[in-house]
Length: 109
Image 1 (tube, rainbow, N blue to C red):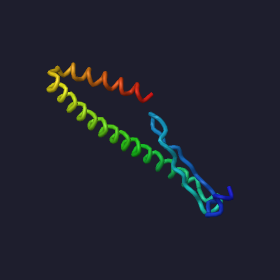
Image 2 (cartoon, helix red, strand yellow):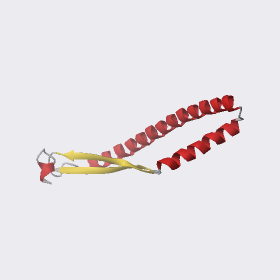
Image 3 (cartoon, rainbow, N blue to C red):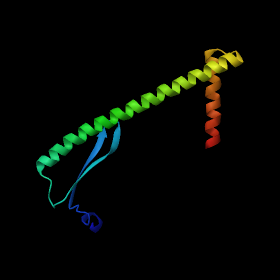
Image 4 (cartoon, rainbow, N blue to C red):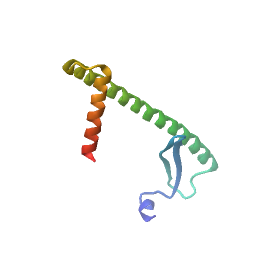
């Protein structure tokens, strides 16, 4: 507590950021005076935390979508190379990539 009081933190209000799929972190507010937060502060913080959680969840979903698209593009290129080089069908090329991926995953464990 002395470490927090020295720079001027005398109270704290914390809100869990979460959506149905899980927790995302916390929104922490610090006050310069004891009991600085009112009931209105709590209500406002709850609303802000809900909006922040939705924004974080949306940003995370967008990042995952972009990564999946990039991965799909690379997989498509690799399939094309295998199809051309080894005269494979799409399914055969995908199976070869899947097998190579499983073997690579086993090496790292």
